[in-house]
Amino acid sequence: MPTTTLDRRALNRALLERQLLLERAKAPAIEVIERLLGMQSQASNAPYIGLWTRLRDFSFDELAQLMKDRGAVRLTLMRGTVHLVSAADALILRPLLQPVFDRMVRSAAWGGAALDGVDRDEVVAAGRELLAERPRNPGELRELLAVRWPGVPPDALEKALRLWAPLVQLPPRGLWGESGQPTYATVEEYLGAPLAAPDPGPVVERYLAAFGPASVADVQKWSGLTGLRSVVAGLDLRTYRDEEGRELYDLPGASLPDRDTPVPARFVADFDNLLLSHADRTRILSDEHRGRVMTVNGIIRGTILVDGFVGGTWRFDRTKAAAAVSVTPFAPLTAGDRDALLAEGARLLAVSDPSAARHEVRIGPGG
Image 1 (cartoon, rainbow, N blue to C red):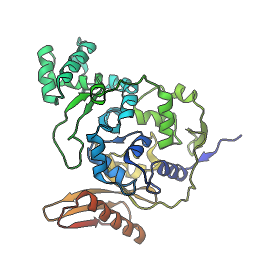
Image 2: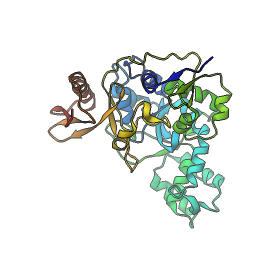
Image 3: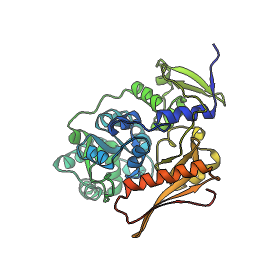
Image 4: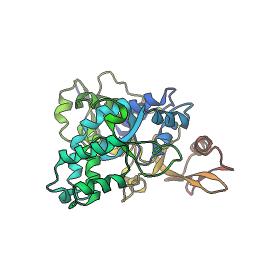
């Protein structure tokens, strides 16, 4: 039987449906966090925007309370970046992704040669002992680890501990409107539960449920792991091809929406995994516009979706007099899309800046 080919628009609509961007869902925030297999939290406020754009009746307080109650936590996970995940998924994903962190710690940016001769198990044991006493910030960890390893740069020791040991960032870090340096505890101590045994198969299936159909390279891009071809080969999956002939995999029972399904204009959070979870991002972001969204210093700007594809960027602009959402379209907007973005921006400001004296939604030249 010939393999079905899915064009870019079909893949776009499938991705948007699974990411809850065709229609807002009515569901608890924790269910959506788990459905998405976590949310990028390099920018600590980004998950609030990411949930708001996917959910009906979402309150920022709902996520803040989840974090305060330890139902959701922030820690280094996929691709070695900070993610917000459920407590249950923290215990599943953190041990599975340890090979990613082991590669990172060998790089110059994270320690590299400065850690030659340093025993990993000893660093982890020392770190666990320090954090069992109480949560600590990076400065405290550097100071205390340097006493044990006086010939090693303290910064390298602290970074290595964050990669070698499973650490979570504690609130108020990650709460809307809060700031300050991270404070760390071990995952097991903070959640009162052990880490799970690594099992990539179920995680790959959950990735496909959130981002598929996708190639092996896509799964590896999302996770940072390598060598997943054999894992994918061992699963019961349906196969497709994309327009370039690449093999794509999907869950057998997963449906695909019509490629012409209309998509409302949307605001997408900065660093959102919608843009970061495929080796081939053209199903959502054209190569032409990639440099305007993904900067050379690693910033991933907030984006707008126009007909389901990235059609511009947006940001908050705040002054004492007003809170504003400023939109920069990449091409002229239709009257319908412009009106939809104005309405969406007003909705966003109502929840993000409820006490501001004035709200403004600004659409720049081209819009």
